[in-house]
Length: 305
Ligand SMILES: NC(=O)c1ccc[n+]([C@@H]2O[C@H](COP(=O)([O-])OP(=O)(O)OC[C@H]3O[C@@H](n4cnc5c(N)ncnc54)[C@H](OP(=O)(O)O)[C@@H]3O)[C@@H](O)[C@H]2O)c1
Image (tube, rainbow, N blue to C red; front, side):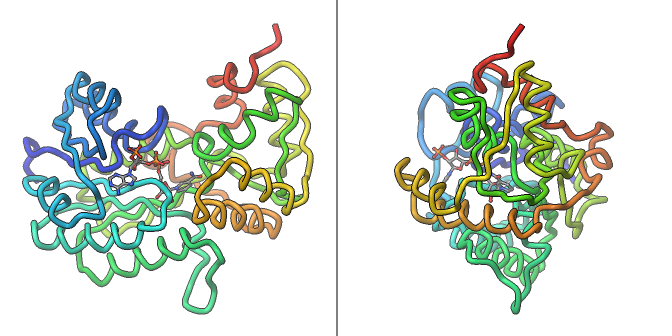
């Protein structure tokens, strides 16, 4: 695999801590050339350019855009925001990657897909689309590496528990007594960067990623308490109340259905999973909840001295 060809990273603008943006930085740190795909020219695009990436603008739902950005790249990270067009974007990427002759396609998926089949699916439109996307990529014959992380600390716990921890010292989620082992998107990004840097040994593999501990939400709250040096408790709220909160935040229906399903599966014990994927692929243990909350203490209302 030629080392001088750019590696394409889709969804590269992201929020701070999002996968594509972090992967871009990690590959640049390794001295690898990166083509970072963004949706629009903005400050985030300028920051990627300043960091040394070749920035390309395009829409993952437009085949001609996808062909333009993939052309010239043999290694690709494919991931984008949870959204209704995810399957279409995946199939478009698969068609283009075949046409262009991609040597390694690292596909972001979700751990729940490990428990899905034709007979056993979930009500989440996003999880269904990830399952179908994996099917399509398997049929495509492309050299694929599949990344299946469990729930993200950055993408879920920070935005959805940050405000109540800040205001009331409480995690309010309808997870019942279900256990969970959230993983840092930063760790998922470290795995993806390691795979993209040397894809050969990973082709055809599926990597499930969790944090270092599976515990119920009271255990998670204790890790928040340790990190913030003040008492944080867990309130098991009613699923309908949580759905009302999500609706009042005016989140897209696709995302609400996905989040509501994640809560339902947590209550059913389906997020009680443990893997050593992060440590095995990166040589470093996965970040704990306590470490994550310490790193983001200000966003959780600060640490008491
Ligand atoms: N959150 C979790 O708990 C979790 C857990 C496991 C797996 N995952 C998976 O992780 C992925 C999301 O990763 P993330 O949180 O790093 O992503 P993200 O930050 O939500 O999205 C990445 C980027 O995708 C871009 N994008 C959206 N639609 C696009 C389009 N049509 N064309 C081009 N770019 C587009 C967005 O651009 P703009 O910023 O300009 O809108 C965004 O910057 C999903 O596949 C999700 O299923 C998430």
